[in-house]
Image 1 (cartoon, rainbow, N blue to C red):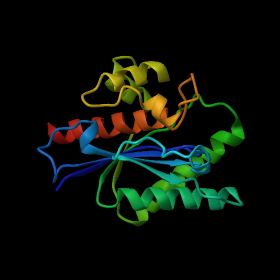
Image 2: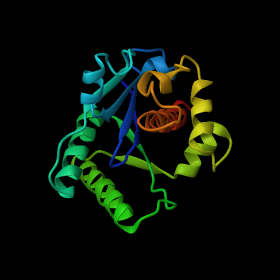
Image 3: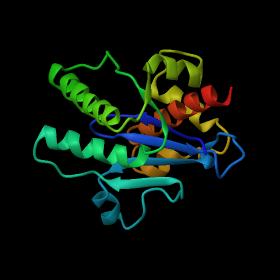
Length: 195
C-alpha cells in the first residue's frame, strides 16, 4: 500500500491531503484523495448546513486553546493523527510573511510538528512554496487565484469549491486556498512516487 500526505501547515487553517494507492489504480485525482482541514464549525451549524457536501472533504472543529504552546500542541496532534503511515510532503517556510511575532509562532508551530514526526520516526520532505507553485501553474510566484484556477482545471476537482466552503465570500480565502495547496503538495509527492 502506498499512502502520501501533502501538508499545507499554518496556524489558522492547516490542511492535509491524503492519497492512498491500495483502493485505486494508482492514478492521482481529486476523487482518490481525502482532504482534511480545521474549521470553526459553529459557523456552519448556525447556517444549518454541512461544510461542503463532498464526501472526501473532512472538516474538524478548530480546537479551543489558552496558550500558544497549547495551540501548537493541539494542531500538531490533529495533523499527526491524519498522517500516520504516510510518506509526508510538507510545504516549507514562506519567508515573505510579515510580522515578527507571527513568523516566530508559525516557525514554532511547524518546528513542533517536525519534532513530533521525528519522534514518531515519520520521515518527511519539505518543499519550498515556489516549487509547488511552479509545479501547479508553471509560475513560481503564482498567487492564490492562479493556484485556484490550476486546481479547478484538474481532473475531477470541484470547480465551485470556493462557493461550497465560503458561499458568502467573493474573495478566495482559507480553507480553500490551503486545501488547494495541500492537494498540489500531495500530487507533487505522488508524481515523484509514480516515476
